[in-house]
Image (cartoon, rainbow over all chains, first blue to last red):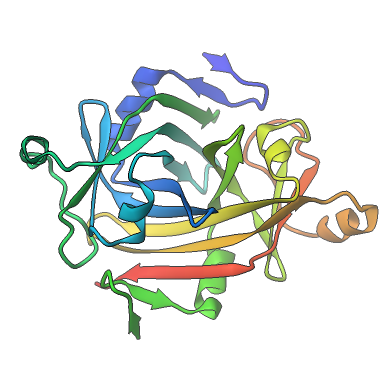
Amino acid sequence: MTIDTAGLEVLGRPECLRLLAAAPIGRIVFSDRALPAVQPVNFALYGTDIVVRTAPESRLARATRDAVVAFEVDDFDVAARTGWSVMVVGIARAVTDPDEIAELAVLPLDPWAPGPKPHLIRIETDIVTGRRIPA
Amino acid sequence: MTIDTAGLEVLGRPECLRLLAAAPIGRIVFSDRALPAVQPVNFALYGTDIVVRTAPESRLARATRDAVVAFEVDDFDVAARTGWSVMVVGIARAVTDPDEIAELAVLPLDPWAPGPKPHLIRIETDIVTGRRIPA
């Protein structure tokens, strides 16, 4: 077990990807008109890529076309004061190729928010880091 | 009840601040060497300012000295596919004045992560927005 300078357990890439795959909600971090922005989304993994569904005219769609974004998942136990978090940094792009759209259609990716969300965002998991607060 | 173009309920500033005050964990969004970064933290409110405790030499402390940051809290019900999120955008600064440090010492702000965390970050809640997925 590796501990960082802050006393947190360092999670390896395989464990980070396992936690990412099991998380129901993640938070996508982007820049919106030069200000930091963050939005929770449900998502699916395709291989190791994160796939998010939104409306084409949304702020999120607009801000994630060929942009570097962060993506975060976490889970905390308030009573035990423990938990973990995983952060991804990678390039987000709009999925526009019809073959790729058809390929990603198999994903269990049904948005929680109402309204049609045909726009797909695909994020590469270039940098993956994770930490756990030791019990 | 106001609904936005995405079909989500728009939460007013008073409700956002109430939800913020009750959340045990928030996520601070900042830039780390020009890349987007996000880190979960426990926090306290002092008036309407967010106060976070960390180590002086931490990445978070370094990146939040007079910087515009975002701060996010949320809560989701996975089974019901509902939930809410609140996002703050504001200026973060290091608290260095001894009187202000003493003033903030009354806060119930005991970090979950191990190790000494004497460095205080104070974030103004300049812009506060919130959304809820209707049931």
